[in-house]
Image (cartoon, rainbow, N blue to C red; front, side, top):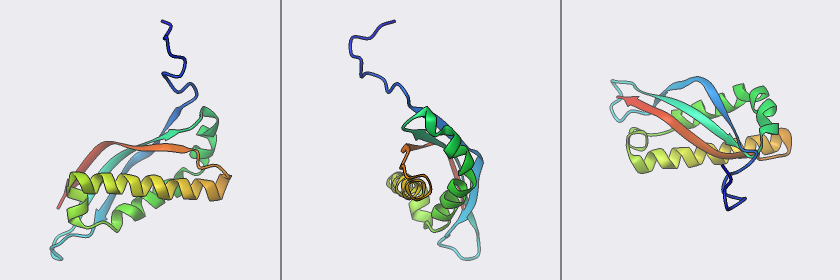
Length: 119
């Protein structure tokens, strides 16, 4: 099917999933119990040519997202606005990392496809 607008879809966008899911603790308001979060993260890349670099740096990307979630308060993890703030923090930090490692920010967006928490 032909589209009337040639820019309707990004032609070279690719997705890379951080696998397995990110599972980590977060700062609970009650020190006697531990809260945890489980998140499935997909990275939207500017181009399919960045897939190899994303795969190569996957351990660094995972470690960074785990660190970001580990620094969040219970209120941040559980609220919708907090979840969006965390997503933006992940996006900003992962872009900085990839810029430093590869010379290209390459990550267009961070998408949480599953987001579960307990605590």
